[in-house]
Length: 302
Image 1 (tube, helix red, strand yellow):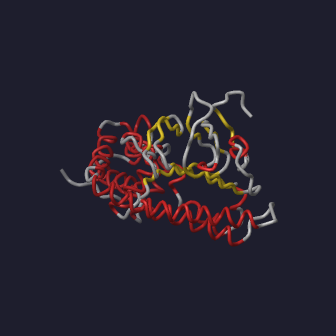
Image 2 (tube, rainbow, N blue to C red):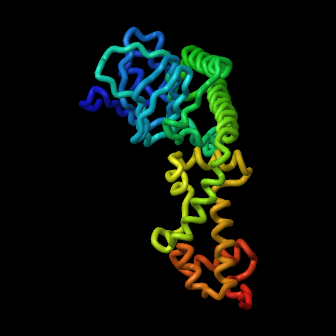
Image 3 (cartoon, rainbow, N blue to C red):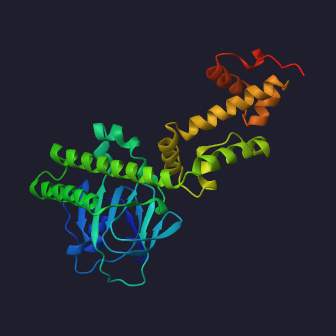
């Protein structure tokens, strides 16, 4: 364990359970009910596993990556391997209420759940994009965690996870996905300017000749400009437009390319202005998008 008492490296799902004095249920899955612990110590966790943390009381100073946030009760935070999350507290003994759920990436290898994991983009959202649960939603999540814990306690095989537990984990991830979709709908309705801001930033990127200096624009760049994580931004844009942020950027770039070529810019000039590293890369992208080579674009007469 690291020397810093406020930092915990979680390379095994049971590292947090040992740190807190909670029961170890399985080698690949851990469910912790913080309410049952006499003393629940805070720590900033470096995750090498997947984790979900449901807080049933207010939490101040929650760390996620390089950011900090304060949360009300019934807030759910999800983290993936390689992320940092938790609370750095000067006090060793505090009373935290809620649940912790961790599972090892090895659990996903060669499974249907593993194939679905890319759909659960919320595992890489930022702190400010945590899921706020209603009472009914919270009860559904807690019921699934209780069922998972019950099955783990009854199962004598601690090296493998039985199909019932896997089905409950799949349901848990799907319910969180649904609740996030509902939250994204609400955020989208309340943030009608998001798409307009995105479009303005996209136009400005080329107008200010940033592509020539920094290359092709990325979803991550625009997300950062709007103070959002790339996945959360992408999901908001998809919720609002039915299209991906990547495709919107790509379409805008190709339309601009066509405009430049039609005004007499050469393929090389256009490629450089749009941020392509090589003209041949631009030509392939252009042909894939329009079905013709950029050299075939007719120059408009003045």
